[in-house]
Image 1 (cartoon, rainbow, N blue to C red):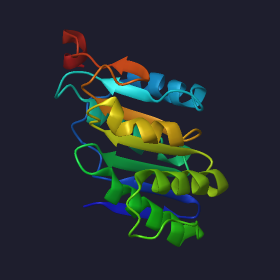
Image 2 (image 1 turned 60 degrees about the vertical axis):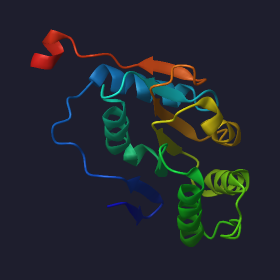
Image 3 (image 1 turned 30 degrees about the vertical axis):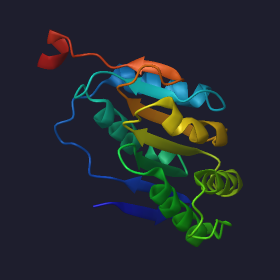
Length: 178
């Protein structure tokens, strides 16, 4: 079940509980944290790798483990239409901090993105936006262009998406036994 938990000035959108069977990739988690902190106004961090390698689980674990470092953590499912997901975020932000958002009938994704980014800049200066399973650069271009200060963590099988790639590989035999 999708829930947004709001407390004081922190919101995070939790798509599901942590995976109890998740095998930690500490080095990768540290690389993601460092890249998102130092690349704040630059390219997104993109976890790439073959299907089933653990990109989504890595992003989910990062979001859970670092939720308190951000004012907002929001998850977008790349397999679904972005507009309803952005509207939902906009409504949450508007109800929480009275941010100006477009009318619900607005069908321009760019208008919603601009309003969300304005709200982030005013009230949530440290925000993480996760896009899971992005298919192509075109799908996320407007998000990358609009969110100048929001940290972007993207998972994808497509290595041609522009950004700082972190390739997830299969575990070594030693890693798989630990």
